[in-house]
Image 1 (cartoon, rainbow over the protein chains, first blue to last red):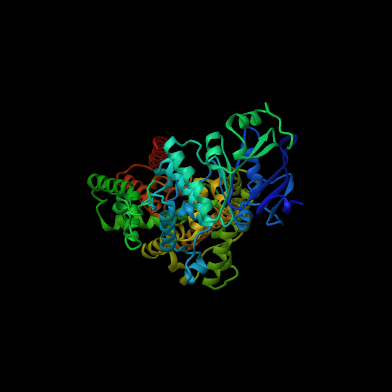
Image 2: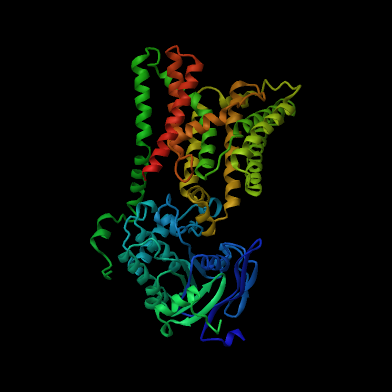
Length: 259
Length: 330
C-alpha cells in the first residue's frame, strides 16, 4: 500500500475533500510528500490550491480525508495541531502582523518564557533569548535584517517574506508549506526568496509550495502536482515535464491518464 | 546574496542584548512625546489664562479627578488594543459599587473580603461579555451595549430599598484625598504596562488587534485570550468602583454613567488605535490628564459643563481623525 509507493514518503494525505454547502472546492485529492523534496502545487485560479493547504494545515475544517505522518494517521484539525506535527505554514498575505516587531512576529504563538517564577506564573517573556535565537537564525539563513525591534510594516516585501520563511526553519521540524512565496515580489526579491526556499532542505525540511510561476517549478522543484477544478489532474517529476506541458495540464488541454 | 556574515548594515544598527533596554525606552518616548507635549501645552494655556489655575492644589485635583477614571481606562486600553470594545464597563462599575456596598453595609464583612468580592464581580461580568462575544460572534459593540443596559438593571435591582452608606473607616481611607487614588492609579498603570509589554498574553493583545487571522494561524488561542482581556477590563472597572464608593462613602446604581465613554475618550486621545494593534497605557494616562486638564481649566474660566462636553466631544473626534489619517498615510 501507500508506504511502498515511493522513496521515503514522510507525509501523505488521502481523499481530501472540502465542500462549502453544495459547492465542491476540493474532491478526493491525494498528496504525497517525500523526504527533502520540494513539491510544487500548480493550478488555475479556483483550482483549490489554497483550499488544499488550508485543509492540510488545519486552518479550515476538511469535509473528509485523512493525513498520515510516517505512515501513522495524524489528526490535524487546528493550526496548533499542524505545528505539533512538525508542519510550519506560510500563508499568503497572512504571514506577519504589521504592528509587531520582527522578534514578536517570528515567535508569535510560540514565545519563549522566562524560566523563573515570573515566566511560570505570569507568562513573562524572555526577550533576550528570543533576540539571540533570531540573530543566530538570520545569520544562518543569510537574512540581513538588523533592526529586529522594528515593526514588520517597515520592511520590504522581500524582507517580510524572508522573515516568514525563516519561521519554517525555526519551528518546522519536518515540513514547510508555502502559499505563493513570491507573490507580490519583484524579480530580484523573488530570486532571493526562492534561494531561501531551496535552502530549506539543507535544514532538514521537505517543502510543499503553491506557485503560479512555471519557471520556479522547473528551476527549484522536484515534483509537481496539478489541480484542476478541485481535483488532482496530474503528478509529475519535474525532470519529465516542460512549461508547455504544465500549462496544458493546468488548463485541461492535456488530459493525464494516470490521474 | 553573498555569505559574508557581518556586512555594514548589520554592524551599524545592530543593538546588542545590552543596549536593547535603552532602545526600548527611546522607542517608547518616541511613541508618547507628541501627546505629552500636547498635555504640557494645554496646561500652559490655562496657566496663562487663569489666575486661580496656577496652584499646586489645582494640579493635584487634576490628578485626583483623573485617577479613578484612569484606572478604568487602563482596562479599556487592553480591550481596545486587542481590537475589542467594551461599552459596559460603566455599568460593571455600578454593579460592583452596589455589591461592595451591600457586602460592607449589610453583611458587614471585613474590608479585604469586600474588596475581593468586588474585584471578582467585575472580572466575572467582564468575562461574560467576552464569552458571549467570542462564542455568539455578535459584534463587541452590540454585546457590550447589551451589557451596558443589562448590568445597569442588575445594579438597580440589587440596590433597591437598601441604604448603602456609612462604611467602616478603614474602607473610607482607600479613596480619600488625592494621594492614595493617585498611587493606586500609577500602580495599576504600571502593572498594566508590564502586562502588555512583558507577558505572552499581553503581547497577544497586540497581535490579535493587529491581525486576528494571522494570530489564529500562528497558533494563538484567540478566543481564550479575548475573554481574558474583557476580564481585565472588568477587573479595572471594579478597582475604580471600589475607590469611588470609598471616596463618596455611599454606593448607588446611578454611578458610573458614561464612564465607559470617558475611558474610551482618554484612550483615543492618548493615541491608542481604535482599530487595535497599537497603543499603550502610558498614552492613556496622558490622554486622561489632557481631558481632566481641559475640564478643570474650563471650569476655572467659568465655562459651564455643557460647553465642556462639547469641547471634549470635539477633541475625541479630532483624536480619532488623527488616527485614521495616520493609518491612511502609512
